[in-house]
Image (cartoon, rainbow, N blue to C red; front, side, top):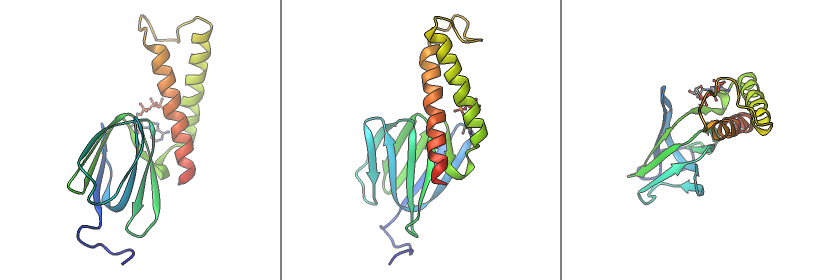
Length: 151
Ligand code: ATP
């Protein structure tokens, strides 16, 4: 029956980032942005461990509503109708601060423009990973800006 919880017809999901629990609930379906493409998880899914990419994690509630979270890199574990998402950062679409994401996006774009001109961004010091770091920062902010439109 739609909107009603029946044994074996739902998944328990927990999304955790370094600050703690971001979302938990009993849901009908989860779509994970895994490193090798999206994975749809329904109840009774086979056990799985997958690497998480920066992307949109979608959850279908027991009332057939879709909700979205922006997630950064991490891992997902699926076992016995439990989905555990451990992400470097995760936010519900409704909780994304747009101005903050725009500021951080523009900062990453400015730093990438400096790198293109052969200059290291302020504060990069001897760190040779900064181009990769700035590209990742940009990807995270663009993802937040995309996901917040789902709110
Ligand atoms: P900023 O420079 O704005 O801090 P950042 O890229 O350094 O952005 P992250 O390292 O990706 O931020 O995330 C740090 C923490 O802040 C995480 O807990 C993340 O969920 C949260 N966070 C980052 N940006 C936003 C945002 N725009 N809205 C809501 N939460 C955010």
